[in-house]
Image 1: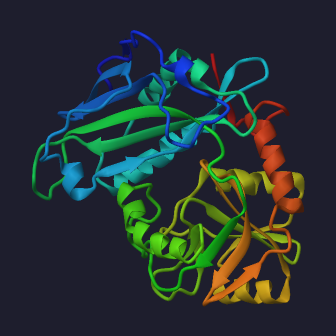
Image 2: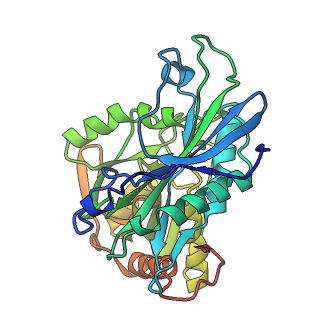
Length: 355
């Protein structure tokens, strides 16, 4: 546990808020005034504090720089009509962070440090939460090894930080995607289910090749046979096949998305027929050819719900009938966003108000 939850607060001398054009905010380009930090050393979390957002001094021998000992989360805060600020399922992020931490031999981050640090940071920077359509405050909690040692071993020193960034839409148009049949993102027994930094670094090269071919994202398949559909680069996947919403069942090779879980629960609440199961590449291609697949979309914290316009497979691009969003995706997106922004009653207890 932390020595004390008396969080030291060092405010900025002058806010940069007036410099921000909230009508034109690019995703991940602007950062709020403050960040939360806690350090782990000698078996305990110490020195929780909020300080001005800024650069970190770091040793050239830092273990993270050499061995990728780093995990992160992604979440959002929303401005409600009454002016309050609300977080969406923050405890699920805290739990997933700790599952990632366990896989990379990092210390468990207690719920009270995560939630109190996040709450105090939101209270301080609440005016950074935009209230325009399709905007939110993106929140990035992350943990990395801060130990100075060039050698492979389990680290003993870590830093946990939370930074925030006002954002607009991550994707502004439906996506053209490609089913990846050569490269693999993860393999069984690996770190695919963890939100580990290295997972994303390893995906950059095949993603670059796909972008050169005109695709915005890859649909990753299993690393052993390339037989089963897994996830997209920044999203979990859903398909509407024969009027049934279908999504790949979870394995240890791809991320258990919080938005994915929310979409599944919301679909059942709305009375949609939904299946979590193995989905083969062959099934997806056959459904595209026969036009029994009427919608495809990806979901995630950054992407929210993004429609897929085309799916490429072995040189052929198949256009979705409802490329701009069909009945399932529009109903789910509208209901989810209305819950997040407080426009309708939250029937699931997902919203955490900042008081």
